[in-house]
Image (tube, rainbow, N blue to C red; front, side, top):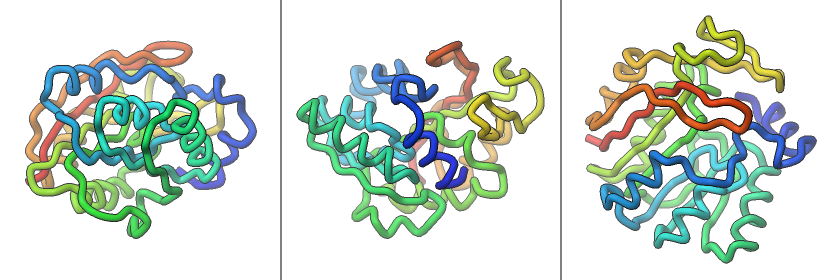
Length: 210
């Protein structure tokens, strides 16, 4: 995932046409909140994009900070929150950096369709960053496209999208090995998630920091 690639997408495309920019929050996140498994707390939205899910959580009592590599996306997120009366904070930052822009420790971190933008050699650094931003026992929700997903050619780990980005499609087992070094995995399963143009098969993991 390159800053120039993502920022160009947000600068040059209509928000409504960006494939991952879906206003309605994902059902998995909604179920965690409505069931009480995740109660209002300090939450970190990694790869927040236009801030839709941060705004959703803020409306349910969460104190949310959103982070994205694209300054343009951060501007969109701040405007989105302003229009909807949501008290969120947003910062442009590289999730593979030191995240010095992100103050404090969080009770909940989540990334939705971010991890497939990161390649295997980048993921350990990223997961350590997430761990270090969570208090012990803090919750982490992550979802990325499964290698079983039929989209973008339907085979191979690396697949190029119509936008020109290259995504890495994962198996449950490789994600289990990635996460279990730092987290207690509560659930890890392959599910179908909505997309703007077609559904996807994705690996969804919910875990807690050791």
